Length: 396
Ligand SMILES: Nc1ncnc2c1ncn2[C@@H]1O[C@H](COP(=O)(O)OP(=O)(O)OP(=O)(O)O)[C@@H](O)[C@H]1O
Ligand SMILES: [Mg+2]
Image 1: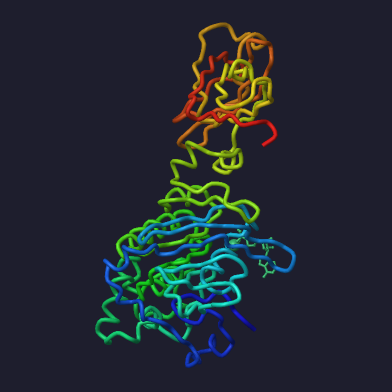
Image 2: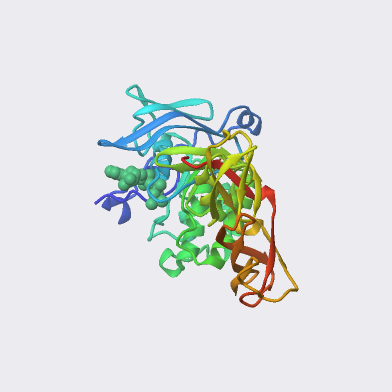
């Protein structure tokens, strides 16, 4: 049986022999370990050019290009099945490159039909969701495992330093079965980071942790990656995790990158409705473009670049709605009003019935900070924060 979820800077396909303790067949590559910071900063850590990858007739990754600077964290974000893991596996060399180019630290590492540098020769650290530790080795031995080219003392120092940073130093002598899932995941990360790879490829490394532990390990990991200056490609389907971790995000759909940029660019200047909706539920309205604007039940919205008379979709984030309670009789038929209000913790969610000037009505959700729970039928005035409203052609 093969296990493809192993981690570290060594052979990544594990056989039963390997899992049961025979590690003599493992190879690893430390020839890039001593690269100077100067040498590192000249090259991009990772480049992928026009990569396409199909399983049989199913195209999983289609014409994807991206680059990763040394020390940069790029998150591959997207819904299940969009090709994130496949792209990571191509970068790692776990899948043979079918089309395109892969360059790691200035070195062409995959050219279809001509060159396939195996994973253990790529100076990449890998950590997959179900990272398997070596059960017969202690935590410290697991982390020093890929460092045999170094003197014993240095090996130990480096491993202990990483364990310290990930809050696992006190477990150095423990065996994997004595650790919780989250603790094992931290050790696996330390092991993958220990050889100071130029590039870390992390596939949903926090997904099996509970929310609170996940926040802490994410934070610890981010600080370690930044301190080591490792270029990291991190897969997640969680937009909040991507925004927390990433310098840049590549949002994928159906094997393609829809938009790549800083979290702020994706959130504040989305190029496609998919980018808007991926970061959270939005209110969707439709209308016709007249004099460069679309009339909606909550007011006129500018529609730059859209053809006069064309249909437009208007996407309004719940936090774009500003709500002002009106001190008038609750005549629910004439005014925009509250349908119900729910406390979500740090914010309140209002279900609203908006009445437009043209008599049109819309059911909208507004998210307002703090505890704001007006009674049903409360008349309200609704205004818009235009920076959280996005207009696209209706058929996009
Ligand atoms: N070994 C395989 N053989 C055949 N099809 C595969 C294989 N691995 C993945 N696929 C298909 O390729 C597509 C992309 O899969 P991939 O695992 O890259 O998605 P993903 O974005 O990582 O999804 P998830 O968020 O669920 O992990 C999917 O449709 C999947 O079914
Ligand atoms: Mg995946």
